[in-house]
Amino acid sequence: GENVEQHPSTLSVQEGDSAVIKCTYSDSASNYFPWYKQELGKRPQLIIDIRSNVGEKKDQRIAVTLNKTAKHFSLHITETQPEDSAVYFCAAKGYNFNKFYFGSGTKLNVKP
Amino acid sequence: GAVVSQHPSWVICKSGTSVKIECRSLDFQATTMFWYRQFPKQSLMLMATSNEGSKATYEQGVEKDKFLINHASLTLSTLTVTSAHPEDSSFYICSAGTSGSTDTQYFGPGTRLTVL
Image (tube, chains in turn yellow, blue):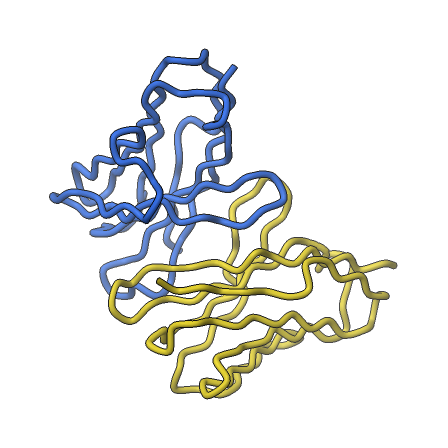
C-alpha cells in the first residue's frame, strides 16, 4: 500500500516568516494530494490540494508544489500568523482504491 | 457545504462492553465512507472503507470482527467496537465524499472513546 512520510514533526517560526512542510509518497499511482489543518480535538479541515497533473497551486498565503518524478510534495505558508498554529497533515489518495493515506503530521507553532 | 456528523462525540465505557459510533452525511449521499483512528499527537490511521450495501474493506492489521462496520444507507455508516478494551481508547473519525467527487473528503467531528 501507500506510505506517506512527512517532515518535520514540529516547526516553530516567528510571525511573518514562512513555513515549509514536506511529504514523500511511495505509490506512483497516487493522483491526489490534499493538505489538512487540524486544531486540537477538532476535525481535519482541507486547506489546499493538488492533483497529479499540476505542478503548483496557490491560494493566498498557502501554496503546494508537487514533483511527480521524485514523488514528493510540499506545503508553503507565507506571512505566517499565530492563528496558523495547528497540526498539518499531508495525504495521498490512491488511484486504484480511492483510499487516503496520511502523513504523520507537523505541529506548527507561530510565535507572535 | 457538505456536512458530516458523528454521534456520540465522546463515550466512556467499561472494558468488555460494545460501543457503536454513527457517522452521518447530513446534506449529501455518500456511497463510500472511511473510518480512521487517531491516537494523541499522532496521525490518522485508515481502518476501513465502508461501502453502502456491501461489506467493508479493512486495512491490514485491523480486526474486522472487533471493529464491525455497517453502511446501511447512503447517509449512515456505523462502527461498533466490540468487547472494548483500554487499548481501544482513541479518537475515531469518519469521512465521506460526495458522489460527484471522491477526492474531497468531509470529516466528521470525531468520537473520543475511553475504555476503563
